[in-house]
Image (cartoon, rainbow, N blue to C red; front, side, top):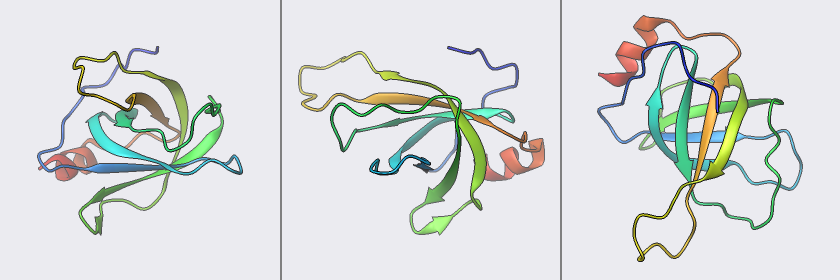
Length: 117
C-alpha cells in the first residue's frame, strides 16, 4: 500500500465514490468515501460480483456524488490497491472491500476544501 504525502481530509457530508473501470464485464465500484487528499482518495464498497480481478495501475475514472448531486466531473485516476477490510462484527454477511485511488492530476487545495465543507 502506498502512503500518501498530502494531508487527508474527510467530507462533512456522506459522499459516494463511483469508480468506472475500463474492463468489460465489471460493474462500477460504488461506495462511501473514507478520506481524500490532493493526490488521491480511499473508499469502501460491497462487491457486486464474486471472484473478479480489479486491474491495478490502469487508467480509470471516478465521480464523487452527494445524494443526486455530482461534486465532480469524471476524474482520471488509477487504482493503487484493492483489498478486503477485516471484519469487525459478526453481523457482516458480505465482505467489505477497500480501494485506494491515485489521481493522475492532483486536485487543488481549494477544490478539496470546498468539497469537504
